[in-house]
Amino acid sequence: MKFAALSASLLLVLTATTSTVWAQANWQLVTSVNPSPGGRYLYGLAYDSHRNHTILFGGRLFGGFYTNETWRYDGANWAQLTPPTSPPGISSNMMAYDSGRQRMVLFGGVNSFGWSGATWEWDGTTWLQRFPATSPPPRGNGACAYDTVRARTVIFGGWNGTRMSDTWEYDGTTWVQTSVGVGPSGRSDNTMAFDEGRSVIVMHGGYNDTFAGFLGDTWEYNGAWGLAAPLQSAGAVADPAITYDRGRGRIVLFGGKQSWATPNTNQTFEYDGTTWTDITATLAAAPSGRWVAQMVYDEAHGRSVLFGGIDNSNLFPGDTWELVTPNVATHRTYGSGCPGTVGRPQLILDGNQLPRLGSAWAVRLRNLPTGPGTLAMFSFGLSNTNSVLGALPFPLAPLGMPGCVLLASPDVNLFAFANGGSAGAALAVPNQAWLMGLHLFAQGGVFDASANAAGLVLSEAGDGKVGL
Image 1 (tube, rainbow, N blue to C red):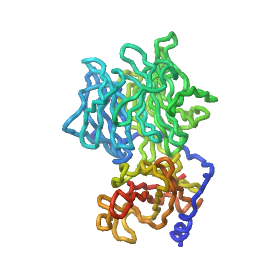
Image 2: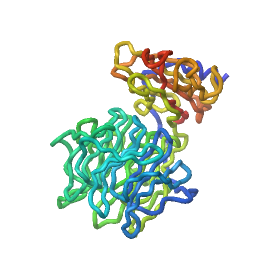
Image 3: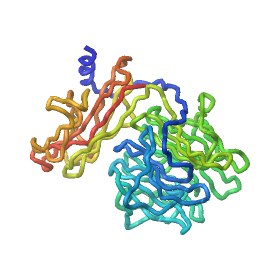
Image 4: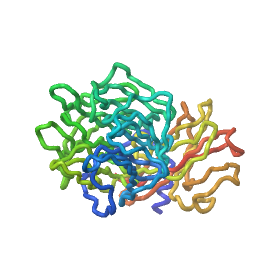
């Protein structure tokens, strides 16, 4: 009876969501990691949302050595990878995951040979150097984030003997400089993350060459820069770790150096678009004070992951911490879509509307044909192992859809017309406690007459876990 009631609720498409009471988050030291990458700093770290793991590259080791190691963290264990091709040993590189192309993008950095202006991509198996027609000047110690709405990797600032103030975007083909002459002042050792709920990149702090040196301003970018005016600030800080905590709908900032005369901080701040809140006093535990660490959000497990950095004894702890929220709702991607006339449709979480009790799970299809009357389909179901067609995944080539695979049971299908190559749908989640922890599944498709005999292509799928 419960599942019947849930199926009935699948027919309700919400136009608004209810407010959410956030559960208490706490830092937890991960003790089951063996082996781990070992202490290092100024490395690249980003979360691969299709393969559902974190990738670490490079950094500087004790003694000043530059490494070109590639490591993977799956939410429980680290594993060192051995790709056939790698960038040279480097630190201070900027790295983000391009979810639209399913590639890790790495730019710049520094080693004993000087500053780099190279662009590399990780495809899940190996590193591939790219040679775009236009590239930013070589640099390290800048900020990098991927804008999932505009499908661009964005870098700002950095250092190559000068504190830089330029903004560049990479679409997978070339780099383009934007916001020329407008935006934040030149800086390095700044960090930024993409706020999925508000569709803006948030940047805070950094270091410049003024007398004060350490910066405490907050900026937001969505193709143009705007200076934010939070009610409370996270203060002046260089090289904090930053990420967007999808489960809590907050930017999380940890640690960093606030001045040359004070110890590295172990404060944890959250930013909701209105104010920065220091939640340090509410936490039962926390990593030691440190700077030049990195942090990502593990979408599959619903937690922020912090690694490494330099502590107040100038040691490299090499430890892994997770900021965990009980009963958090999650959304992860799995499987692969099939190509249509404009590429593979991409299914993404829409506006950070996770499957929370009493709210709605919203998903969006991108990379759709832009012609008039383009119709998209959204299938929601209760299984990713069985369907009316048989066991999942179910290959659809015999039905005239070569390369397409059914990944989620199509218990209920919703339809929407695309606008500008995109379409969305939302699934109601009743406010019933027994639903907590239940997994729901979604897959999108678009009617594309020239793509194949069936005139239909499908996206990858989404796995949503009901929570708070």
